Length: 148
Image 1 (cartoon, rainbow, N blue to C red):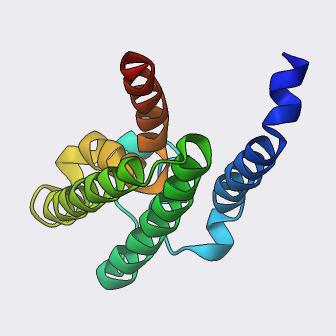
Image 2: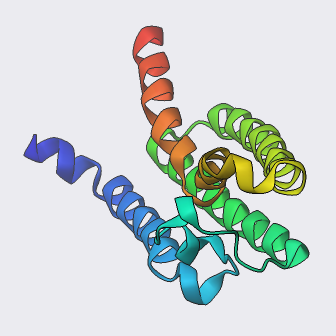
């Protein structure tokens, strides 16, 4: 095991750096991004109305955050697997999933609003958290093991 760690020092180092960047995005989310729902969902939101929202600012902020998380996640996939096919496929998935989620978020916010607080919460969660990387790493690892 120790020999494996020494052999993969670079991979381990860059993986930790990239995971650290994802953590920093989460830690400094209040300073970096406009998202009135951050505080809203920390309170007793079930009985309160939505906060004042600048829809364009929110859309831009969610988009930038999703983009940053996606780029860091793509670099992490490359560091872990050293396979550009995996990165290209993941990039396509991120573009499709990001577009579907952004459209769903804006649609839900504009047309359903207050009655779909939990739907909005979960769509937003997929946009602001790097959840897809938690699915992609085991899936691609499993696929690599099957090819061996």
